[in-house]
Image (cartoon, rainbow over all chains, first blue to last red; front, top):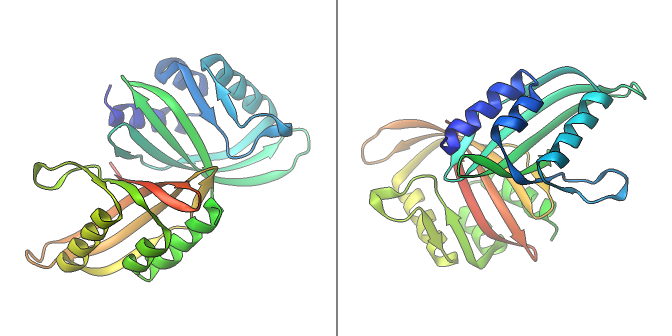
Length: 121
Length: 121
């Protein structure tokens, strides 16, 4: 798949919140996933497809999603960017939050090898 | 300057279309600037601050800008992203176009060392 094809597939699956399907179809085994902030003082970097699966497990367990919107992708060479706007509640605290961030993805041989999430400041 | 400070300054200067001021204040001498497509079969990559100055010279000479909007920045670690939406006419052909793209910037020691422009697909 080209970078644009991977990008469009991510948008399609994220809009369905099909996180595991996206992971299995589009991610490289050695993907690096980077958050802007780390939870609980750990590293903001997660390495490997199974690490990303753990992030998804956490997300679907912890979050009630009221809405999750993905922009059309922006694409150039091996990179693409998607903007996400979400309205979620943490299930435990019932704290409701609006998230706005971009994902910056790097593709190699048709697979996502790096993703970085950058919140709006 | 932190990444967030550089990002906010870029937004401020781009909204004023102060391209040269942004270049002189915020860009590293060895910056690499990458377009999604190359003009006339050349390289999509421009190296060095003076190369980027040449891109700005071309832009201000060739383009009549009807509007140029910059989003608030998205920031994480050494990276930031800004979305641009512009309405421009090429002066020579009078062809009017709406541009929508993101800039993905990398910062090192308070200076922009890389910028990539990704159009919406």
